[in-house]
Each structure stands twice: as C-alpha cells, then as structure tokens.
Image (cartoon, rainbow, N blue to C red; front, side):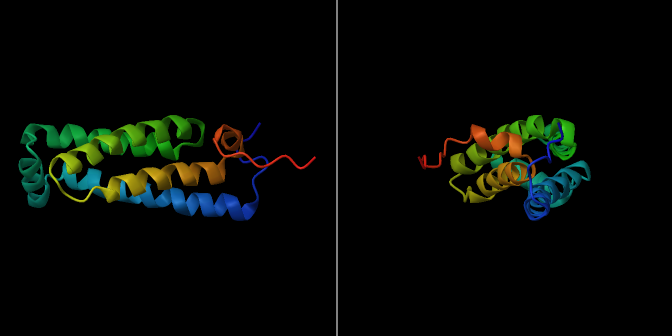
Length: 132
C-alpha cells in the first residue's frame, strides 16, 4: 500500500511544502558545518562544544534530513530529526537563548509527514467524536 493512498492531492502537496522547510533549514545548517564557517565555529565555542565535533554533527544533521526525505524511511527520519532537534533545543535552553526554532522545525517535520502519509493519522491522540 502506498503511503499516499487516502491522501488528497492538496494534502500531499501541502505536506511536501511543509516537509521541505525543516529539510532546507537542516541542509543549510549541515552544509555550513561541513564548510566550518567562522560563525559556526564561534557558535560551537559559545555553546561549549569542541571544534572537532562540527563536521561529525554536520554529517549527522544531513544524514537525518536524507533519511527523512526518502519516502520509505520518512518515519524513521522524522524520529531522528526529532531527536537531533531535541538536542538543539536543550542546547539553547541551557544557554538561556531562544529555543523556539528547533521546536518549530520538529513540529513542521511531523506535520508535513502527517499530511503526506494517511497511515500515521490514526496514531494521533486526537479523536473525532463518534457520530452515532
């Protein structure tokens, strides 16, 4: 059964657009880490992370985005993105800085996936009232 079965064209395209937002953000961030841009090096120092972790974390970030992009592994990718973004959120909270960005990206990743894949909808804790 296709993950798109039972999904309207509008929902599918909305899901693709919403899913693209965290993917683009994580891809840009991951590439900047691989390039070891000065702002990234400064950011890592600011948060207390050693410079030697910049490239491995960039690779991890890109890998999570790729796993999320592949339809067959998108659910695993959303789980991995949630874990990665949870770490980013804690890093910002610990530093006393705004933490909404990673949370919003995580919500968008799951919202996009829910719009694209009807099989996930019954797993939501939201229930429609029974109309008997």
